[in-house]
Length: 168
Image 1: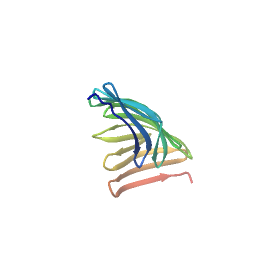
Image 2: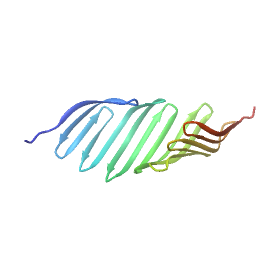
Image 3: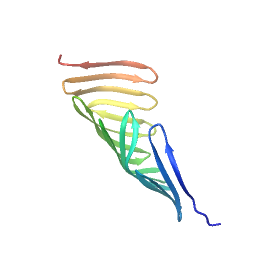
Image 4: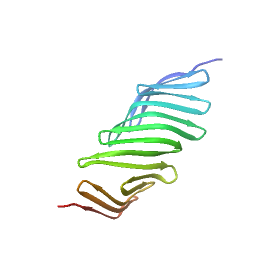
């Protein structure tokens, strides 16, 4: 009964959508889209992405390579949008992240990490952002003539305070 699987599918989510071709080749399952390809073999999933469109507040393009094997991730991904650029070095089940946000007053570089247990942690100058089941913003950052000082928490409701200083 030596059969072979082949399917043309459509992947759809609130963030992206694309045609997806899946086929069996030897001991592997292969995937192909207009934005990349992948392979699942012996418990390992390898993906190569080229400008995969993702819609979240604005449209981004995701590119790079990722490998999931033996419960861990490796590889490097880049996310580019009109106002945001970020790169992630994948490791274990998380990533080291760096990038920059473009504002009318200039660029804000950021760096941090994502891990499943502590969540997302980013730093912009002396301002720390932490997200896991809620969002906290604490510290100080300067952008052009503006300075932001914050000690805020959002976990379904806002608590804390923030202050913006201007020369005006």
